[in-house]
Image 1: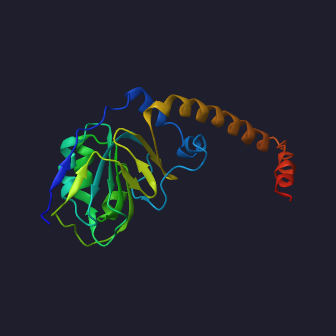
Image 2: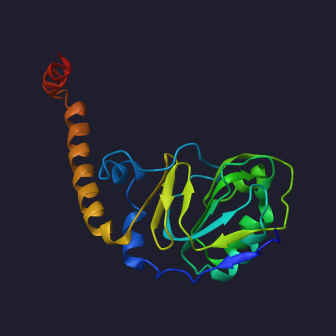
Image 3: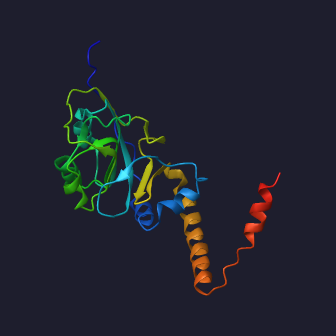
Length: 221
């Protein structure tokens, strides 16, 4: 069978910058709690100096260890987008390294998420440009294809659609549809206030843990 090359689809509409700006100030854990604690990726790690990430997903599906589709996907990314790459979790060859992540930062991307391997980690760790990956391998990438751009992908067990909001911090990654953003943000901010009230109660020595009795009773058969 001949190599079909790169299947290209136009990017989805960008999420409003005001929504993205609000998300930068909210911990991913708080956002995750509003989605029943069942969403988010598993197994990807941040490799950059600590910095929050939020943006519109431009998705890429590629063969493990091959970055031809990633190279082409730069043409589909706008400032503020996050390039999200599904390489099936393969870590036998790095997909990107210091040069390609630096190019993404200079282009104005909000981050890169790769369910695959990266290299030049010492260099990447010195920057605040967000880079998440499955692992590390010094072996360089192939550039043969095939691949797809702006199709649904799976990243660490999390489905990401083109145009989804994707957020990340040192705790991990979360993606959700833009139409859920307003509700998730408001609920997350309300939870943040409740958690700060709990922290203040702990500082004051008045933390009420009576709720534990009800939780324990619920476990009884």
